[in-house]
Length: 506
Image 1: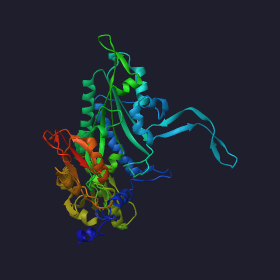
Image 2: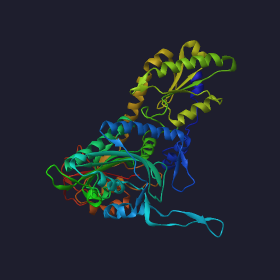
Image 3: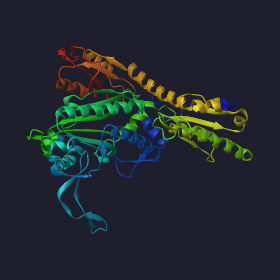
């Protein structure tokens, strides 16, 4: 009877469902999980504690991975002189429409009782959209000799890109990220760095986020402005759209020539350095939501979840002391276990609210495992256990729970990855004609779920643009594996030596 009582619930905790209206479902999951909210500043968001704890876990994991590959953290200015961007024409053209510009530095009272800008700056300052130019100017002072290389630096920062259409975590005017910037003596070293860091992103996405990704090269029209090559990781969301989850750029000597990053080589020659940049952002939290969450709310992979296990004591006044003592001892046993190389993270929710309300609070926030303990459980030596991706809670012996808690978390992590991979495989096709392409990417309405990933041979990127623009499809990447099959262009029929992944995307 207890299992039946506890498992009665509304059809879904989130309305609308994914099938009914995916974009609105996404916003409602953020709200229900208490991750973030819109701020008074248009296009910006307030990241709330649960959402920021998630970001902190992302930061910690990636920061350890960066340092394990020899990188150090530093910090560079938020403001960039406009003349710095003007030195790299292709770069500034790529970001010009998104730049926020500071032109004054002081406020004074106006005649109407308000305030107005007073002191005009001698040179406008750009609020950091990305830092290649300002960091490059700094590196130009640091680099004199081959002995000064390589420079391997990362910074955790905020950036501003004046987006017109915003969506929390996915595209906001201000967001948080990390950006790595490195300098090398040779092209080979810089290319190796570019490939190494996209592999770090792949490993993090798949092993921590439980999110399968495709690693590939961006085509010339899709590259980072000013880059010689851009590598990316591309993932499929549950609405079958693609999301670019991380990028790593080989910048060649483009920025070093613009910023005068030169060094004396071992042979005594003055040479321009070779540079890279790479980054991921709070967009990863949007990816996490859309990869795993369901119609009851957020679903978190255990490796990133702020809490692994929540224990909910159930008691009346006369049994409170007994239940709380039992719960405290259970928590001590659980935190003594390890998962992914660290203690299991356990909290007790003893708030004075209804049991059902408390349960759904944690379901919607995506806590991997929920435990309920009352007097009858104590008498039987059991615990009532709910795992986030399973529909029903079940009773389990306390000793068995403690012994298998790490295994349960590892199983959930793997099951989330497997489900996401199956979704991608089930919705990936190979297309060889324009008719097939049009049918696959037909517009079924803004809220409909359709399409997926299409692998297509193509001969000429420019010739594809009218069709891609019409269907709102982009070339996501040219995959770096399983892509040595000769074919013919799906649009022109010309011989083509490469295939790309095409998709609608965020």
